[in-house]
Length: 311
Image (cartoon, rainbow, N blue to C red; front, side):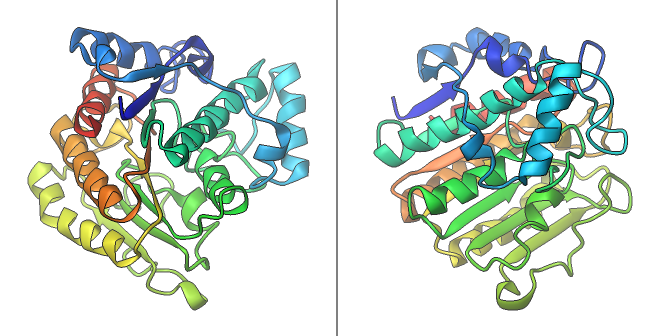
């Protein structure tokens, strides 16, 4: 089985309470559909794995990590200006998100399971020194740093189709020429975080290594397919050694907090395309992360299209 999918209660604990858009039930909504479709019998089901402080500190500042630890004990207050509330056990829950990604990297690089999907992951808003937008630790940034400092892999492609711009990744690597970023998202004039405009293409030596495609509200599959070839061409131009894919399902029609109108098939198309690129440049190595998505039916169907495509 070339595809490993991470599932377990430990990942489900990353959530901000019942009734919150990012609630703890999201992973179970996904997995219920996975079993209905019979895909659970076609993948390697991997148990969530935690990470160490050293792993987190590859990206985040010591001061911020300590803040998360303290707020995790008290379970009170916010980690940012009001989007990301603290909850008891938050540090441990976020550590399972990061750790599952990193364990998946080991599997992919070792060749045991070159394709990996972690549904509760892709927390793309957190910055090095702060949380943002429901994201405690930026597992994507930690993955990039781990690929470089532990595995010696410098050229990485990061593709993000979440409705929200992946600002925490983009601005952390805006001057990094080795990280190719292609981010397809709802126009920031209409949606948080209000960034990711077409003229943001990287700075300094990294100028031209970033592609932002802001989409009008209501963009459907036709609009998606009209621009996707640009993404493919751009990712190939970076000749990546590893591919990261943030498959946020909040870009599917009917999400309660966004205004996009893709169908789940768009997510499957993106995953299949990126797997072909990974096969071409990266010995098949690709890590996909679920990202956002707050309509449970949408995330269940969208993420399972990703799983099916990766199979």
